[in-house]
Structure formats: structure tokens, C-alpha cells
Length: 178
Image 1 (cartoon, rainbow, N blue to C red):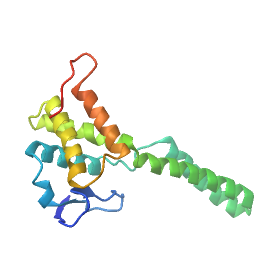
Image 2 (cartoon, rainbow, N blue to C red):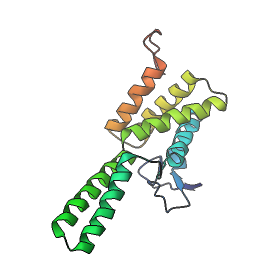
Image 3 (cartoon, rainbow, N blue to C red):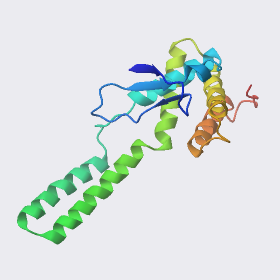
């Protein structure tokens, strides 16, 4: 994992999508904007970015991988047999399953999972759940403002809603974020 100072970035903190063949994973930070955040916001946002980068499990078995592999094998077999229609059908099956699998890697669910893992790591570092969720929530909102965005993206809104649920579970009175 590498940290790179990139002052002219559009985003305060960002990293490239972690492909399996990339050994080095870099987190780019605009330290001019980064230092405007509180220490707890920086902690949680950085932990979250690391959890997102390291949490990408490319080879965990899922049905889409099996169907894509099976489709590719059948397509190769059909091509060897000279059956164009069968090869096209198997190729379509393989590409459809592969597309589903690829989209899961970029879903808001992966982003929320990284948030949860960052909170768990923060707890091991001395934060309690509410303080960690509050720092991450306020950090997400602060980053959007620092980056000059007019509002939160759909994924950021989903993440914030889930973090507010951690802050205010149904059996607890409402707590106002700072």
C-alpha cells in the first residue's frame, strides 16, 4: 500500500479500482484539503479506503464465476465442434455471468461493507462504534464539501443512511450529528 500526495486531484482521497494483477495499490491524498478534516475523520476515511482496497476478494467462489467458466468451456468445445450457434449461446451465457460478477465488485454493497470493516478496525484502535460511525459520516459529508460537489452521490447517500442507522438504531433516541 502506498500513499501519494497529489495536490491537484479532484478528490481529497481516492484510489484506483484494485485489479487482481496489480500488486501495488496506491491511495492518493490531497493533503492541502486532507488537513482541514478532524483527526477522527481522517482516521476513519483512511481506514475505510484501506478496507475497500484490501477487501476486494477476486477469487471467492460465487455462482457467477462458475457459470462464466462453464460457458467459456462450452464455448470452446462448441467452437472446436464447428457449431457457431452453440458457441454464440455459450459465449452469451459466459459474458452475462461475467458481467453480473463484475458489477457486484463495483456495487454500493461493497462500499458499505468497507465502511463496516473500517468501523470494526477503528474499534480495535480504541474508538467505540458510535464515535467511529459519527466520524465516518461527518467525514463523508465533509469530503463532499471539500471536493466542491453540490451534494452526495447515490452511493454516498446510501452509505450515510446506513451510518445514521448505526448512530440511531430503532431502540435508541435520536442523536443529532455534529
